[in-house]
Amino acid sequence: MGLAVLFMIMAAAGVALLSGAIVLYVVGAITRQRDRIAARYAGEVEVEAGTEAPAGVEGPQMGLLIPAERGGLMRSLTGLLPDAVQAFRADLPRLFWPGLGCAVLGVGFALMRLLGLPLIWTGLLTLLIVGAGLFFWIRLHDRRRRTQIDMHLPEALDIISRCLKIGMPVSAALRMVGHDLTGSIAREFLATADQINYGKEMPAALHELATRCDSMSLRFFAAAVAIQAETGGNLVEVVERLSRLTRERIQLRRKIDAMTSEAKWSGRFLSFFPIAAVVGIMLINPDYFSNLQNSPYLMPMAIGGGLMLGLNIVFMNRLVQFE
Image (cartoon, rainbow, N blue to C red; front, side, top):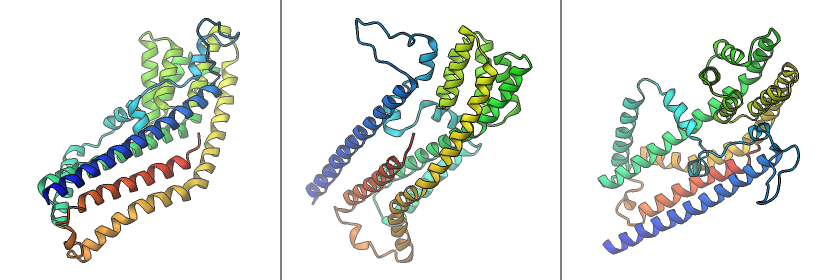
């Protein structure tokens, strides 16, 4: 019996590692394809060794439109940038760590009470459940942060255009945005204004702002400022047009979210309903799964089922993503 249990655990671990490798490859391929498409639409031209770049491609403004490669394996696997974790840590509630400890103890007690598992399996499942919950919380926070920035970006561009009309420099206009608005966008613009005041070049600071916020509109704004600094031009008109374009993009994003919401919530429901059903059955009839508690197939089946439910959420979200 001991060898059978060990064999089942090793087989489950092998299946989990193989499935994780497949998911990592697929997610990485999707991310690379998305980056290539974004680079092509941004105007990036690949130059072979020993050849010269085409006319009109050189210049700092072209690099400002290309999204920076950041995150590496973390972004390919989780879809999160390092800035997302830093922003989550900056916005942590005051009682986060005591609440996390209580959640770990509560989940561990519930698993021991309902499933009657040994201490080692209880600890592993508790860490897995709490870690997954923390990961989804960080993703939700990052999504809300970027949504808030996108929603307030047209207003920020309007403030910048009004400041430029009365003769204020761009750095002062950025600081004015930070003082007039609230939330994540205010912190990002204030940080960028401080970088410029401390001696950082304005195009580089604006490019870092666009990278942290993951906003194509801010990349266009950084390129417009770089072009205006080199060749001149009406920056106010460019910012006003960019503000109108950003509003139109927000409206298009809302339409896409409305059309794809059914598929997203279907995937979430199909993934969380089995877990809710099992918990409900255990609460109503605790002895319903008593014949499975001592079975060597319980943990491999639970791990495999949880992995398949997680893959369902990942692939359903990938199918309805539009850039």
